[in-house]
Amino acid sequence: MPYDVIVVGGSYAGMSAALQVARARRKVMVIDAGLRRNRFAAHSHGFLTQDGVDPARIAATARKQLEAYPNLVWVDGEASGARKSEAGFSVTTSDGDAHETVRLVLALGVTDTLPEIDGLAERWGKSAFHCPYCHGYELGGGPIGILATGPVSMHQALLLADWGPTTLLTRGIFEPDAEELAQLAARGVSVERTPVSGIAGEADVLLADGRRLGFAGLFTVSQTQPSSALAQDLGCALDEGPLGSYLRTDAMKQTTVPGVFACGDAARAAGSVSFAVGDGAMAGAAAHRSLIFS
Figure 1 (tube, rainbow, N blue to C red):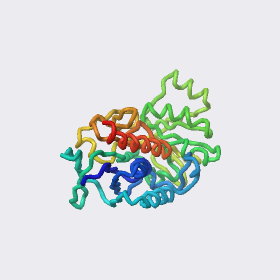
Figure 2: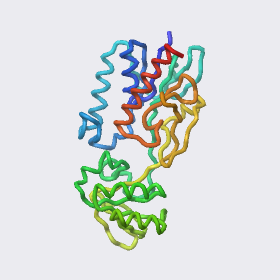
Figure 3: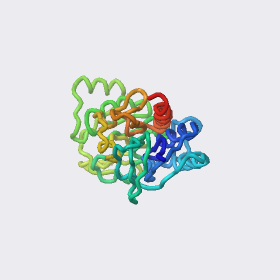
Figure 4: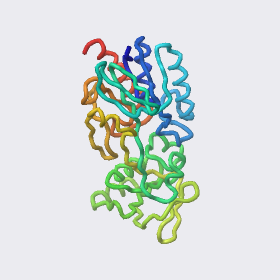
């Protein structure tokens, strides 16, 4: 017998989706490769009741609670392929096993592509970030550096000024026009045009002219894409946002392929743990309801 729902991805969105299906007493499988997007961060912030908690602990607690449901099966492994089948969909794992399901929830997560700056990758999630709501408060109002990647960095600079004195390092990639310079000045944002040669210390920016600028933390915009090609294999449409591509869904989190739902960072223009949990709850409930009403 096929599963009622298979959820591909066992991070926050995927587990939230699976929880709704499990509590509806339907057969559900979670397939998870074990690569949470925020695995580089020591603390998660902005998520009610879990503010400041190690994200690995949040994930481990959620999985333990999920596995208490006897109608849920957890598979540690990678979903390597997916296709339409007589039952609905067939998902193949990297060990060659194929699993049939009536409905499919894609909680694929995303892969971040960082600017090529020496020392940045080693500090990602520790002293270099992408989300001020997740990490800005902990900088204690200290100086913030923004490593520009394009026009979207203008938005980031204007926003981050609420968390501390902010400097936009243009890196020769983005040059604000006169109107934008006036907006930055009104927010107290400094502009540094000297090329960046690397990152050192906790969050110090090394400039090409030999100067070293010290910051409490750094922010930049990574480019993202879904961490798996399963959605494309199934024919799901993607949209392009300022941060990269993401899966197109309707208000009930169904993709452009009937019976396939998507949630979490791979199905949003931008994400966080809170958004992922809410997204997953909607996708899981919608997938269950579709078993009855579609």
